[in-house]
Image: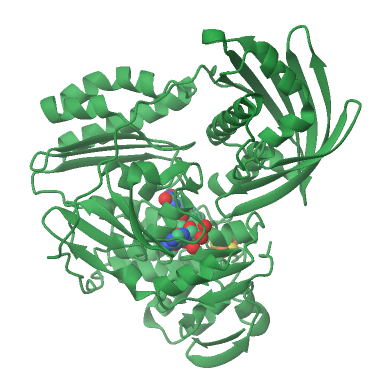
Length: 360
Length: 273
Ligand SMILES: Cc1cc2nc3c(=O)[nH]c(=O)nc-3n(C[C@H](O)[C@H](O)[C@H](O)COP(=O)(O)OP(=O)(O)OC[C@H]3O[C@@H](n4cnc5c(N)ncnc54)[C@H](O)[C@@H]3O)c2cc1C
Ligand code: FES
Ligand code: FES
């Protein structure tokens, strides 16, 4: 796609792929390598540049989204008096060592100095928190910015849009719902979810023992083959914008007497892999129905292992178990399971990978 | 990592965005501050994005004595800076200030945050705490969804694939109103480990207390809120542990404790404010 924009005062008309982010366009196409890339997920701040005068992350800004914009990179501040003062102060206060963070740090610092003027050290540190420096320990950086901000007034406020007169409909009153606490035990690497089924234990167990039918109740799951204890299939996952398809194999064991089953599986989507174990048991429930107990444990290998947000996984287990139970009940009652949104077992594991985005 | 290939379209109006979404395999791009990281990590691989950044309707502001309607396209930084006359007794500006970092706030939008529905996101919890309404537009026109019904679970909302979140309606807080917002996180700009919100507006009778989640839908504490209305912060604090115990029974004790601390600090902040 064609994108027309101004970089450091010079107009450019460039051809870029939509997926190219601004930082790559600056570095690769315009050879402005002063903009550094650290994390490419918005966390480290090394890639911070000005877009229309405001600091922004060039790693999570698509170049095609900058049509008509004025971009200023670290190379574009030679004649800027505030940046000149900051450069000198950074040097005087030893505010850099390897310099990797410095371009983003300076762009952020300039914005803080202009926007807030002289401010407290606490506020300064808060404002600089989005720019990581692994060398200096920040003391020199804070001293440098403090020195440049000393005695300055904050920038004048922008125009304010009035929030006045119109006919507004009254707010909708959502019924306050009763929270429905579950029986799940707290904590641990294993999660347990219990759901009530209308079907009697015998009927529920018979349905659960038929893996092909069970798979149709698991949202997003598809069973490709069963050979003895070996099963192979895939689980589609959709969580907001995140979509994945885990191909997996596993082994299943069933124990008729105790009405328990166990699936040990391994799934893979591209570079991510996960191992998990699901156990289930059918117990007699209230009113002739039954209670389905689902237990889940998982192990992540490789780079995934460091991420985890158990609470998020638990919410997914709960939703999955409820959807699964509703479908299973419908199946036992002889109705076709409704096509559900894909939310698979491996969504749980996938949720952990997703947590990488959240654990920042 | 780099995003997978996709097609990019820019919409000039909500109707145009809806029409593009209706063709399928298309997602809205607002600030890209959640979509960008997910795409760079290849957790999300949308086939086509329709950019709504230039849609003027998404920046409408309208209000009367009771309700203020804010377009979905306002950025966190604009709300932080008070780009629209304040109707929340300073609450929205403070919440906005606590989201991420300035460079992220300069792009990320109110609507994008709500549509993304990260349980730990600040707007998700604030809008439910205020009992707001979301205005959504699809092929057959606009509909309004109560904030408590909007989020179905983590990263899942009542928006269908061909709908755009257009605006958020929030109550105008009166001069007597008090609020407290407490976000627990280890590092500035991080997503919350726990969020507590308390709002009391004697003028309108609004009283709400919320234990913001990190795993699923925010949990409101209506009995504590009722105590707040009747007896003020001290009475609310006295009931809080009991109601939290019951409504947050699904959480591990340490997570529940974090939640209770966040709510307690929110109520205490309200008492001081
Ligand atoms: C380093 C970092 C730290 C962060 N910290 C926090 C934090 O502490 N608290 C917090 O709350 N948030 C935090 N965020 C997230 C930030 O607030 C995002 O701006 C926000 O979640 C998404 O808004 P956006 O406009 O960028 O949406 P996008 O990323 O463009 O879109 C997000 C999702 O919403 C959909 N969408 C967007 N707009 C609409 C619409 N109008 N109608 C329908 N669907 C729509 C998109 O299709 C996409 O699925 C952080 C982000 C980063 C990068
Ligand atoms: S590279 Fe952009 S924030 Fe780290
Ligand atoms: S100077 Fe090395 S990272 Fe900051």
